[in-house]
Amino acid sequence: MPIVLIRIDERLIHGQVVIGWANQLRPDRYVVVDDDLAKSRWEQDLYRLGAGGVEANFVPSAEAPSRLAEWRDAPERTILLTRDVGTMRRLAEGGGLAGEAVVVGGVHHGPGRREALTYVHLTEHEMQDLESIAAGGSDVYSRDLPDAPRVDLDVLKRRWKSSS
Image 1 (spheres, one colour):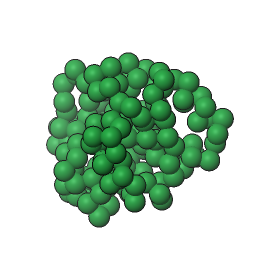
Image 2 (spheres, helix red, strand yellow):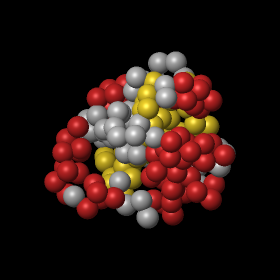
Image 3 (cartoon, helix red, strand yellow):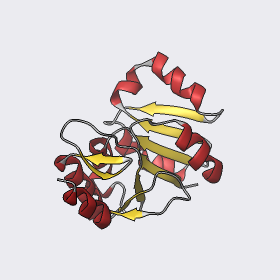
Image 4 (cartoon, one colour):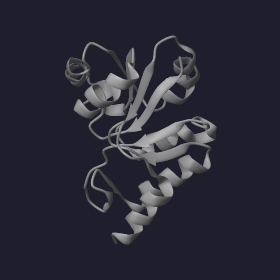
């Protein structure tokens, strides 16, 4: 089965993902690409508790690009998550995510960030990273829940620019 969702969400495996997205997509596993979590067994255990019985794997960002084909070709339905835009951009380099949809979920307020949507706040560098992902052939858009309206990257950028 292909990867059924590729999502940027600071909270990674949490209620919106487990209840909202997973109820519709029925994943067999979550793959979380995050360097800090890949090193922390006790934090991995906490996320596994919230995964609702679905397998959860934690992979360092340097290893993840070489495993994309494996995850796409495996029989398990996979939700792929990154905590931040920069990690997703690194996965997309060299066309790694070409032809895939990349959903921008929860990226919350922080230093240097401006609001594009109530659940998406970005720095200039993060906006450039999203544009780079799109330029590499990915369909980049925002959506907090599967039934919520899709917000395309051009609209997201317009709203982000107008919030300065």
